[in-house]
Image (cartoon, rainbow, N blue to C red):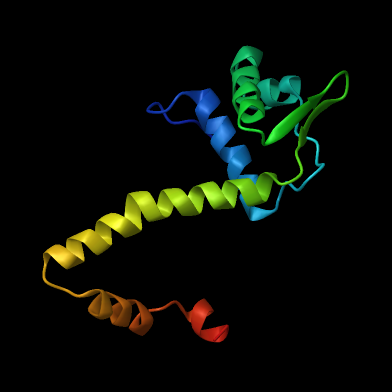
Amino acid sequence: MTEHFTDSTPIYMQIAEEIRNLIIRGALTEGDQLMSTTEYSTTYRINPATVGKAFTQLVSEGLVEKRRGIGMFVRAGAQQALLASRRERYFTDVLKPAIDAGLALGLTLHDITALVNANNSPHERENS
């Protein structure tokens, strides 16, 4: 978990984002229990209401569920939902603007595709 919190983003949002990242990386999997509100608040010396706000956000996103009297747990399909959402955001926020910029510079889609293929990651080359 984050060792310290930045001033620029509300703490509850940082907690929620860290939990999302743990789910995406597989460090938290379906059915895993999250630390309790009390554990978070004492570990990071923050107000329990701040942790509760982070949990509420994750519940509203359908990523975790509260089991009354037991705690918060990662919901089935949470990792797939996060990956789909982040892939869409990557396309919208990063890839589409980059393609549009390349086209504005006179590159063709064929040029852009050739550049991508020529510069694919070592991981992608291993899987080809």
